[in-house]
Length: 313
Image (tube, rainbow, N blue to C red; front, top):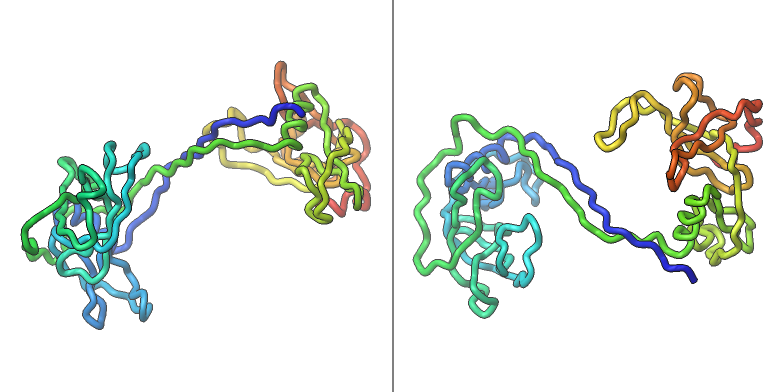
C-alpha cells in the first residue's frame, strides 16, 4: 500500500468585533488597572461582566468595581505552554473569584510547581506593563498572602473607551487525507482524475472518500473519470482573497466530470464571468508543473441537457 500523505496546516485570521457598553467598560477598565463587574437585579456581581443576566435574560448595565485580589476555586496545571499563551514557563490555569464577585474569571497563575497550587489559595492580579484594553492587560495572577484588596471606587466611566478588539485566531494541525484521497492526489499529479465506485449503488465518488456515505460500504475499485465535465451550478466571486493571485470577479463552480457520480469544485476561466452558465461543458487546464488543474475552460461543445446533470445539483 502506498504511503498515506500528511502535511502540517495552519488556519489563521484576525477576528474583529465591536464592543457593547458593558464589555467596552470592562476592557477599558483593565487598561486603567481597574476590574469591573456587572450587578444583577438580585444583587449578584458577575466578573467577567455580561450584558444579559444568564438566569433571567434581563439586560444589565449596573457596573461595579471589584478588588484585584481573589480566591482560586479550581485549577489545572499546564506543563507545556503553547505559543500565544500568557506565560512561556509551566503555569496553572485557574478560575479566580475576585473579592466582591460572585463568579470566577479564567486566567493564568504564575506558580513554580503544581504542588504550590491549591483550591482556596489567595491570589492577586499582576498587571501587564503595557496595556491596550484587552484581557491580556492582566498578565497573570500571582500568589498573595494578604486580605481583600481595596477597589478604587471607579464608576466605570472612562475617557477614550475601547470600542472594538482584534483577536488573532490560529489553529495548527496535521492533516492526512487518508488512503483514498492520497491515491486521488497522486493520480492528479499525473493529470488523471480517478474516483472510487461503490460496490452496491455503483456511484463513482470524485474525490473518493474511502466509503460510500449512502450505503456505508468501503470503496476500492478505482475508476478514471473526465477529463471533461459539466457545470452544474456556480457562484461569482467578487471579494479578492489575500492568498490567491486571481483578479475578481471570477467564477467558482460545481463540475460533474464525465463518469462521476457527484460534482467537484473548480474555477472557471477562459470565458467572461457573466457568460458562465449551468450546463456549460468544460475541460481542465493544467499549469506548468501543477499537481492539480489550475482552472476549467469551455470545450466549445453544446451545453449539456439539464436532465443529464440535475441529480448532481
